[in-house]
Length: 246
Image (cartoon, rainbow, N blue to C red; front, side):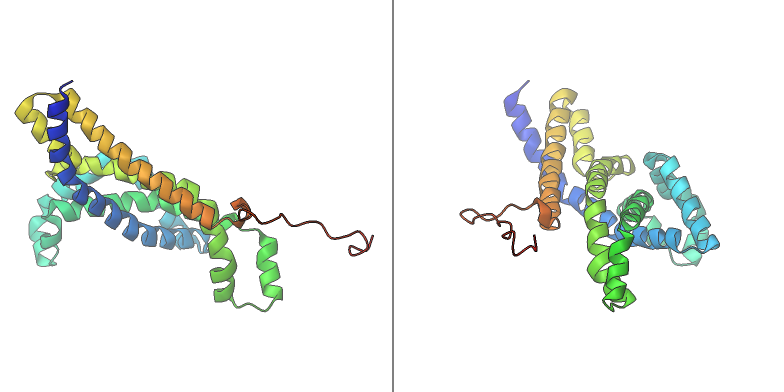
């Protein structure tokens, strides 16, 4: 291991981090909106919508992401005249847009089932209590259903975020120079694969460590029962027996 070379490698590969974060951020943001739509379709009770969402989820969860990237970038390029006629060639000729599109479609399929599980985990009794309090459907969703569903789905969705950060490395196969793409280019120049990939792995590890810590903080903020009483504050004591009606 040449530590001096690894230091220079780090400075080279770190230049690909902004592109990595842009790919992950865009795909996760757009994919979350699409996933919520798919989850709503699954829970709608309408057969056509449910079947359509199930078919989409089955296809994109059952095929490799690498194959999906190839089909979108190389496969759709064979239909260039048709895409030019409908004004979409400007989108599918750019590797960045194709990578974001593929990552978005893939993460939406996984996140849809995560969101659906979170929505189904909301206790029915709390929804009935909200109805008894006179809350409208929108108020119930905003105050009861959504906070509980997010809290229940967050650990699983946190894993999906980490997987998508790592999945951005596949964008290097369509010429994008993020961390892995820069690593491949540096290996071709130096023929020192071990040091380069060790540094690349360390960069991904650090990013995912930061993501994990952020998810834990959000989960703690959304879970009042996980919080301890402030330091110096005495814990709440039970009421006297006579006050409890004993």
